[in-house]
Image (cartoon, rainbow, N blue to C red; front, side):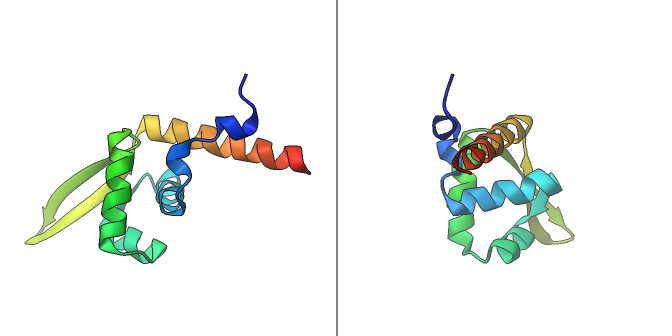
Length: 99
C-alpha cells in the first residue's frame, strides 16, 4: 500500500493544473475566458497545461462557435474526476498524518 506522499498524482504538482482541476471538479465544464479570469494566467499557460491534462485523458476540449465567435470549453472526464479525487484524498491523509 502506498504511503500518502506516494499516492499524490504528479500530474497535479503544478499549481496551474491544480487550479484547472479544482475549478473543473466543481463546475464540470468552463470556457476559456472564465478559466483565464479565475486563474489569472496567460493564454499559452492555459494551453500547455490543458494539453498535458488532455493527454492524460483528465480533461476534454469542446470547440464550437457561438454566433460568429469561437468558444472553447474544457470538461473534466470521469477519469480526471477519479484521479483528482484520489489526489485530494491522499493530500488530506498526508496533512492529517502531520498533525
